Amino acid sequence: MQTGCTLWFTGMSGSGKSTLSKMLSARLRAMGARVEVLDGDVIRTHLCRGLTFSKEDREENIRRIGFICELLSRNGVIAIAAAISPYRAGRDELRARIENFVEIHMHCPVEVLVERDVKGLYKKALAGEIPHFTGISDPYEPPLAPDVTIDSSAQTPEEGVSAVLRRLEELGIISSPYETIPGGDESHQG
Image: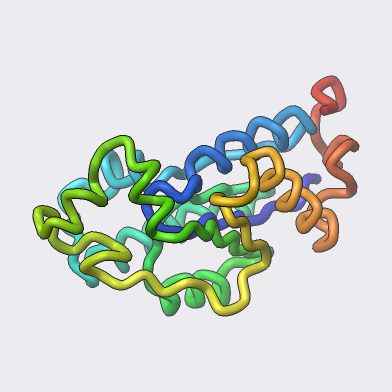
């Protein structure tokens, strides 16, 4: 049986959470793992439609994603969540509840996020056109002791994936980034 876990990517908008989670998912699947990705934007569209960006609704959004991750990981799936999840208390609550919870902080300075912002959201937020924008007009509380920190302004996505795989090996969740995960399909070795 494969060991289930939750890999929780947190970081500000544009920090690379979705990109890295998709790349990591592909690598883990190639190793034979059962993986599900829960992207914050997709979940908000389908499962959490109607929630606003108030503190209470943001917390509820994270609780819902966390509940799904808990179910998946409890059943031997590697659940990968990519959500801003701005409040430390919410992430700490999930860590306390979910066995094999791995917090991955996608760090990136605001100046770099503004430069790489293809949607122009930071520009609008800085101009006061978007209320409750995380890291600008709403808080983002970075983790105090994440399991992995990736500085997406200095590290490539490939380096980030390698760092996460190394940490999963250290935690005993995978045996090696180059071996099949126990219980996985050996024909998909990476």
